[in-house]
Amino acid sequence: MLETSAESPAPVRVVSEALKEYVDRLGAIWIEGEISEINERTGMAFMRLRDTSVDMSLSVMCHRTVLAPVSPLPQNARVVILAKVSFYTKNGTLSLSAREIRQVGIGELLARLEHLKQLLAAEGLFAHELKKALPLLPNKVGLICGRNSAAEKDVVENARRRWPAVQFEIREVAVQGAAAVIEVSAALRELEANPEVDVIIITRGGGSFEDLLPFSDEGLVRLAASCETPIVSAIGHEQDAPLLDLVADVRASTPTDAAKMVVPDIAAEFAMIEQFRARGYRRMAGLVNTEIERIASLRERPVLRDPFVLISSRAEVIENLRDRSHRSTSHALKSAAETLVHTLARLRSLSPQSTLDRGYAVVQRGDGTIARNSRELSIGENLSVRLAKGSIGTTVTTTSTDSGE
Image (cartoon, rainbow, N blue to C red; front, side):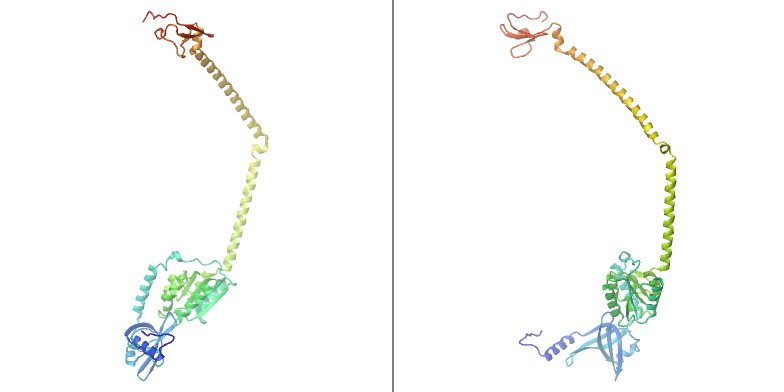
């Protein structure tokens, strides 16, 4: 590790040599990418190995004998290279010295796509619950397509044929090759950030499996899944199925089909409005006729012919209820009076006063208790005798017991 400071900086030479030493320790590594250009001269081959997801490439050189087993490579061929990384201290550049080159076959690409498809499905990126509904009439339609492509013309012409006032925000990009993923992703981010764009169409015509590979790129698919604006995918033909179709909110089989999905047909809308107007008229006419018939029926009712019928019939009911109430109240009062007389008679028969009225008296001692037994009294004790009317005081002079005891 270099020890440097502002006072003792390291020379460029020292830094370059340190970088070379570090890179040399890396050893041979396997790298995957896309061949963007090949130049062969004097027994050597010089290539640019490009990453399809970002704007980045590396220089690769090798002997022609290393390239021979896979030569000739098709344009934008996807390869896997075993290479040794080298750092040149004179100009400060990195290069890769290839030792083995393998072209990635379609079978391997299909296997990778299937694995990526299962991975994204497990994460829920294809879930139906995440699909967003298309707007009925978008303010602006974002369109990502190839430069001067037939797909662009199909979308624009069919959309304007259906709705002449539709507005487009068009981004022409590379739709195949090394730059496709980068340019499509940049256009998608730009349209997603535009608040006037209500729906985005990503389209291109048919092509080979390799031509459609950019639309199965993991970075592009994840970007589309994160967009809040609804996306319509119209890639290739019906039998083509890039991963972008699965993550898009709507999949269209053709660019023309995409145009039909994003804007309504103005003729059909006018016809529908006319149908709704006719239905509304029939509905309102039916309601009015129903109400007219109801009013006529109400006018035929007896209560409307003679409004006093309701009052007179209710008066008879009230009169009957009043008579019933009077009879019921009179009966209840009479019954209560008889009950009160009987209760009063019983009360009087049980009253101590009635006993006194028959000639009996109540003898009370000085403490107010009733004297019941002569044995409990003593000579000279003062007593109070209560009569039917009034009371008298007396003194015990003699006592005697009942002859029956």
